[in-house]
Length: 129
Image 1 (cartoon, rainbow, N blue to C red):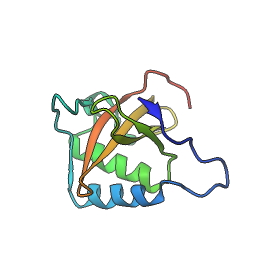
Image 2 (cartoon, rainbow, N blue to C red; image 1 turned 90 degrees about the vertical axis):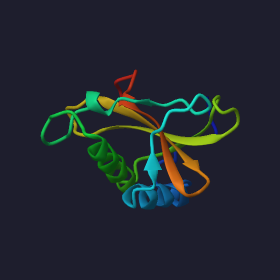
Image 3 (cartoon, rainbow, N blue to C red; image 1 turned 90 degrees about the horizontal axis):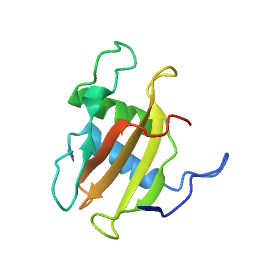
Image 4 (cartoon, rainbow, N blue to C red; image 1 turned 60 degrees about the horizontal axis):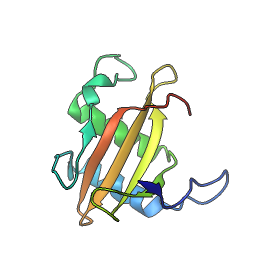
């Protein structure tokens, strides 16, 4: 995968505000999936990520709530072009659910403008901001 656009710099307008708004709306209304297919493989390990308050493993619904919360906080998104399927777009970000928790990696894809497909949710391989 390769970056299609760089992260916005400080003070720069959010280039991804429309896709961010769509992701939040679709996630909050339950129009979301993490279904694995050979064409669109996923790597979703939400049980290995701790809830920021209870410190217990996240549930699937808790994972989606945290993704929406991070998107609402205007976490910077990076647009990428996928290898699988070739040429399709996705948006990624890394964040901590709490200052003392490991960095997580999240990759989202829009399917037909009506569903969010979660491609990745797991501890980041690079634990730095």
